[in-house]
Length: 179
Image 1 (cartoon, rainbow, N blue to C red):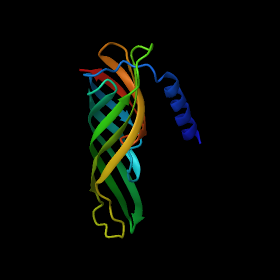
Image 2: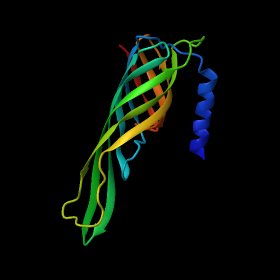
Image 3: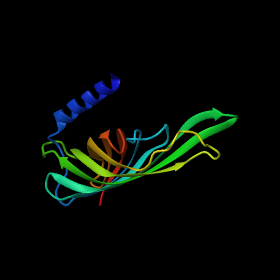
């Protein structure tokens, strides 16, 4: 319920200020972020999702780009005959993104956007030695996502961003740089 309330408040805030932005055609943005909640992880997260994304403005309202991310998790299978069994997963995500940037108004230094992500999550697994049970580890998979976010620029080239969504992270926060 708290999660739903938080998302609802964010959507209302975005809708109330979505007419302000500083995005324009030809902009090149580099985003470096961190956040919990990579979709499809197994067990508990050890390293939160760390991502680097690059966006190129191809139109006054649209940008496209790519994103690379890393995360890890572990699954504790418990003890059996005096041995502890633990699986460790690493995730390397590679994907493309498209974003829609809302129209200009009176709020400077702010870029409000929404977008989609499509990519592939490369999963590698370290299984416990000596385990011969029925549990089998999963493999790599197609990852899709959507996000809504905003960038605020402290200087013409440096700012911060916040995204909410599904895919690379449920909440991603970080730095943004105009190149």
